[in-house]
Length: 135
Image (cartoon, rainbow, N blue to C red; front, side, top):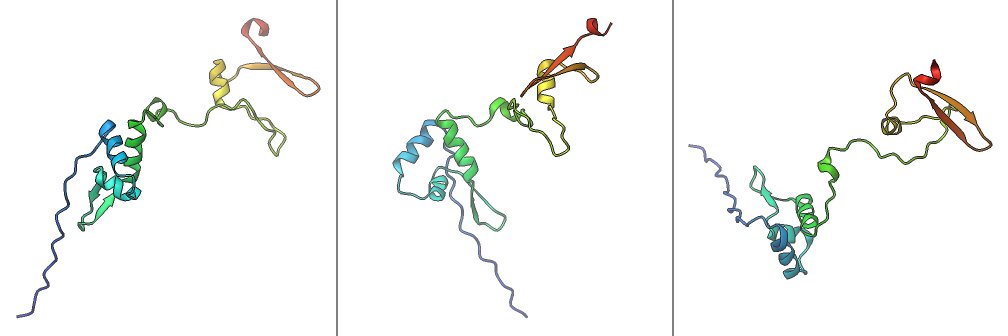
């Protein structure tokens, strides 16, 4: 009868509480000499893979650490999309100036709105032509 290879059983992974808030800050102050991976593990920020290996969750650890210090990186819970208006535009290679939707939304403009263009020495004025001007 052929020998069957026995699988090594992985050592049980210790269950550590997931520290947050003041407890997390206190633990990081208690263990200043640990590497960041070891510190994250000691604070409970790890998980086990299917193979029984330990995976350190550094991103989750840092996020909890920032939150414990009162710093929030998520403005409006991540619902904001796109870039913010810088109020600067540049002339494109084809000579056009593109004004993005952030500006048109802020002004409440709709497709088909008409503007008068007035050119100055180093400036351009766009004057919105309302319905009363068109009639």
